[in-house]
Image 1 (cartoon, one colour):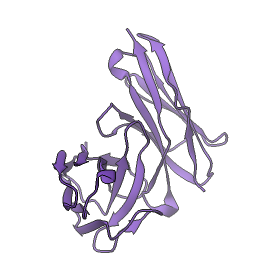
Image 2 (cartoon, rainbow over the protein chains, first blue to last red; image 1 turned 30 degrees about the vertical axis):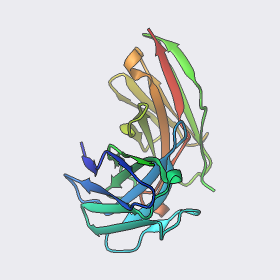
Image 3 (cartoon, rainbow over the protein chains, first blue to last red; image 1 turned 90 degrees about the vertical axis):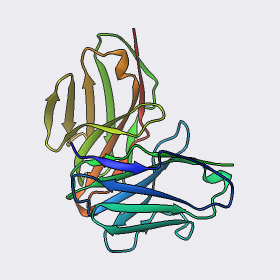
Length: 115
Length: 112
């Protein structure tokens, strides 16, 4: 099946640090990638939709200047959490889809802990 | 507003029994339906998808779709302790490309 690689799997860093998370589709071209956040025992929350070659579409309440998304190619999207604070600590998961209505495939997620 | 609803559970079934997970959706324009399994601390993994009314079987899993009643279900036969996880229902709409709308998930525990 389709493979989505996400790195790093875990990040622990000090408050104020910027953290970049990469999401790669390894065996297919992903015209769209999605970034989710999940707090413990809660459901997935869509943060933004990333389209190759264009600006990301952010969900209501998600600060686009804090969560920078770049989708420079059909196989790579990055999420940068700028000036991270403890409240940004969460499980960040990317997914990639091909054509419309095809399944999304998830990366393994990045557990971000801000001290 | 596109809503996808699931009973949060927890749902407990004995090993070997059939687990039945249900999902309802609000928008009749829904096109595609997906079931994901998420183990604690892990990311979701795709189990099945279904586009047409009726049943779709894959091993121990059967997805059932009823567009008239706006529900989709997942049956797990011969449930195993390793099936214990949260099951997420997702719906996509042709008009919104492949953006998914997820339910909150149903927690399943299979008791040995």
